[in-house]
Image 1 (spheres, rainbow, N blue to C red):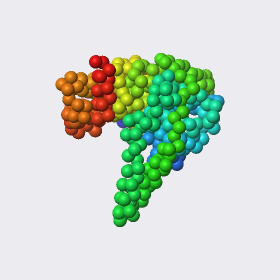
Image 2: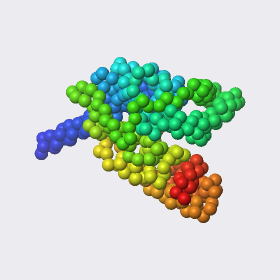
Image 3: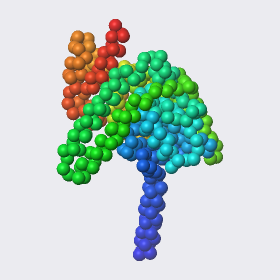
Image 4: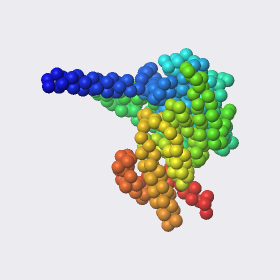
Length: 355
């Protein structure tokens, strides 16, 4: 009896050790550089985020192959993009062959100009039209101005706070934030919107040589959502999708969005077979449940906005009155009535077009 119990105990310990080793082995590889942290979602598939020493504002995806590297998105300024390029040797010595823009917004595409001459920049045709000026000057648009104009005030406020702070540690932290924001402010004038030179409408497939074969890279447009030209980068073998800002862990900016079409476009994303999705902002994600939650939010927001629009309420007043607290369980940032006025203004524009 004792021998049997001892055998069972040893067997149990063996199983526990195996589970522990499996768990340890399942932890993603992380590489830190002075400016970026890279997390490996699958072999050769990396999500890059800024460390805080340079203002990057958005994530990137890096695909490392045997002969070359593909990068998705280029951060918020040429300065941030150069920091990314300087960090890439921590992952690979292979040159960048492709840069893919998930969409045209400044925080994802205003580093394009810093990438080496001769590389292919790929994006949706709408992204090309926005970045080459065919569809208006992106540097004068409300989206860019609403984020970039307040930076000077932020710098002034941080300078005042740092000067008035008596605690050395808090003052040092404020001074570091001030340095980063000041460098960002100084980097903005350098931006020269640089459009893709290869475009797609619905789908474009690339193949990258990797050890033992090739990696299939699908660039997919499921319809208008966060912008008119969102591209999802899907790796069917690795079961990874980079979603840009079409889908985030929280609420995405809607000032250029097509809220009425967005939920249907997300159905295309849900139809992909992936284990991990990498957002344009935030950590590596696994569950598809947040997609359902965001679809429900978008549909509800469109209905509530449309109701006030038909009642003749101004978009400014509607932004104050719309109550989305019924979604606060899934989106904790919702703490009371009122939504982003830029989103409501955009939805009023869409409703005007329907008249």
